[in-house]
Image 1 (cartoon, rainbow, N blue to C red):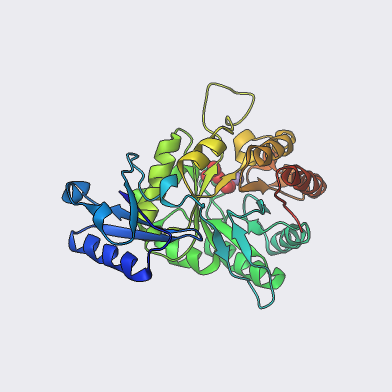
Image 2: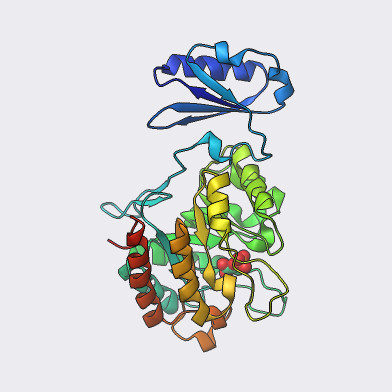
Length: 346
Ligand code: PEP
Ligand code: MN
């Protein structure tokens, strides 16, 4: 249930509704937009059946959210969610995800060495991108493949973040690593394979830390939204949705990048939508065209993998962009974004 307040409603009106809802045993989510305040009521809605909510002071209208995702649903925050990352250092850049700027997250699939990570962090920062991506804990299909540098990788990531002054996003695979990962990451990443690890989602929901949830290999958009709902229902509303390709019968690409997910998720939800054309295609030469297409489709951000020597990469080398291809892509993405009144770089 969504309660839309009148423009003239006061803070006291909002507070009164919140207290009434609490007394009925419902959770509330107050969204204070520029235009007006919206209050979401979450819980067993049968309780409020028959209660004349629209008679309460300050209430303009009462809408039933028929979707199973109540907090993630677009109706709750029509102006869209903006996630703000405070500068890494004093005087540094504030990153706003879900605003007019199209966010770029770039870096290696895995953290492999200190030198390589620092070099790529510099490159990503210089290119005008917003976040460094790099995995310390890697979800690999084979237990014999490189599993990531783990805590040592996290340490290197913290060093790169500080030294270069760039925000970082990195994957957390296990609740047991959550505190350590959250201590370094500006944005947590829940990988495709963990999209329905509900224990992990609930634990992340208890933190005050943005999280990007990647769509599972065989999950519907509704299931992705329900995963976001798991995090949000625990109190953490800073969630990003990521389309990274789904498994189909097609074999020419690693996955089938479902770009229709961008407008669909934006219609259904107020959460920012990110596209990962690296995992979405699996081949470096397909990454740039699909990144351009994602920006054209209206994505709020792009995540791409880069590597100085893709043939020697410890993971996902075939989809890694060389630095020079990446830099060319950045310029192209900015041009595409500007057609739509957005931008990538300053
Ligand atoms: C990754 O970002 O390196 C990764 C493992 O992604 P996904 O979970 O989408 O496969
Ligand atoms: Mn990868």
